[in-house]
Length: 199
Image (cartoon, rainbow, N blue to C red; front, side, top):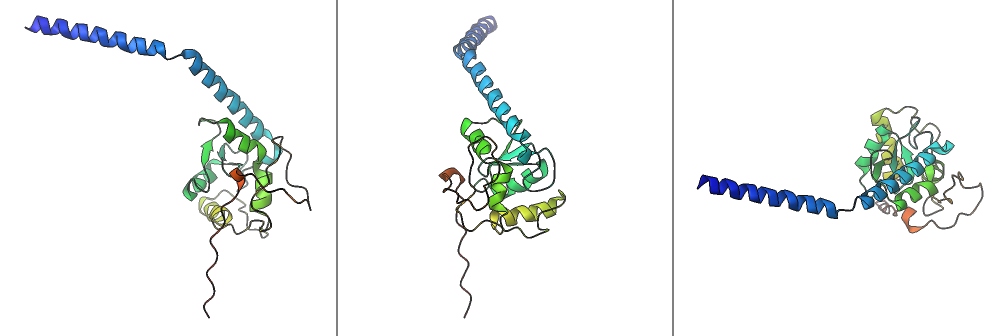
């Protein structure tokens, strides 16, 4: 009995090992390699975006060399600010690491077309002097980020959202230029109307 069951287990183990090997052989390594090459190309494009002068400093604090991004806002942020952005929820700020996460072409295009200067031309259009944090102190930065993106306290009320560029790091919107309506991917959801004052 025992010899028969051991032999049967070996046959089963051999069949299982061959099936796993066959399955592995069916997964095409060239496709995995192509995906890896595509990711490297996207990472290179992100690295070029990060080298643009407008993206050398975090969009929300004075920290240099940000390595995180908010895809739907089209901005680059530091590690500290990325935590505050995550707290806003993905419906406001979808945060990704420029080095560690996987990216799609559409996500990279959004960052190429926006960047910190263009985004802040909208999000900080009515920023009072001294309102932007002068350090990356967590509680101060978190309050500022909530005011900026969640409450939309400083936005340009004359446009529907930030105006994307052509993807070549062309900087902020020219003064007195009437920007075209932004594509839907950059349109900012309208804030809830303020309640009417009590009589």
